[in-house]
Length: 345
Image 1 (cartoon, rainbow, N blue to C red):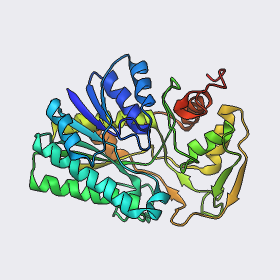
Image 2 (image 1 turned 90 degrees about the vertical axis):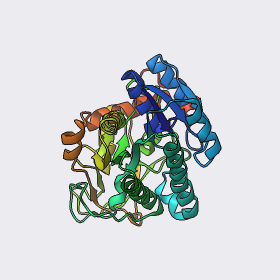
Image 3 (image 1 turned 135 degrees about the horizontal axis):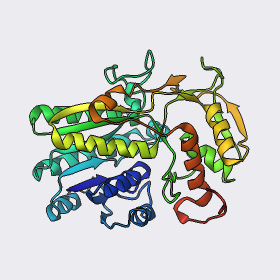
């Protein structure tokens, strides 16, 4: 069975490639490499011992995408491709709306042309906006508060409308919480451009000496230590969630949303202390003002994914931090692969 993976060279995409290949699927990767590196795919080949096709194209290039479908008999698509930085989306909303939404429209148009109507979509918990209570369930009202989140919410609605127009479509909308960690081999992981906007790669870059200190945004939230609480999920658990969602869409028709999270929340300071323990390195940090739009507590109710996909996140926060550190320590410059801490296990 042949699966097209858009954005497959990225952080979550590359880990999902590994799980699909190990499960016996044949994959084809398309990625424009704007926020990813082709080296990640070379590492996927090394980890799995399997080869696959890669096309460096942008989803906005419909003719190039059409060629990929024309030359391959594709059974389903896992759609990761898209811009993803919340802060950047506020500064550059038109770019985000055009890239994320128009790119998805082009993809769906080509899928429809070739009769490929099985899709797993990379959505986000940002679609919930500011929830009134936690844990967050899939039936909560949606209200994204930034352009990035709104692109995800709009795409979800587009895909639901697509199914209404043609009931042959089968779509899983996967709402991620906070992916962290890396493959246990230490060969693939998160390689952000510039200073990371997410907590764990930021902590890891402080630990490895690339960044002097961590900025903690706010310590006056209604949490046990005043810092924000989030639901962190190991990227390998997340990748396996895509495998389970793929199995679902291959066997059923319709559209449904699933939270992919652990159902547990950890504060920023708890994550710092856990990372210090597993790495043996001190993480200097500075408390600064809250970021606009940040909320105090956010974690998932993952019961629906357990009941309908047979999926449960099994890796704990210590393993997440340990795997993040192994990746960063062995790859301090990301996929440039300059190893400086060879004793990391």
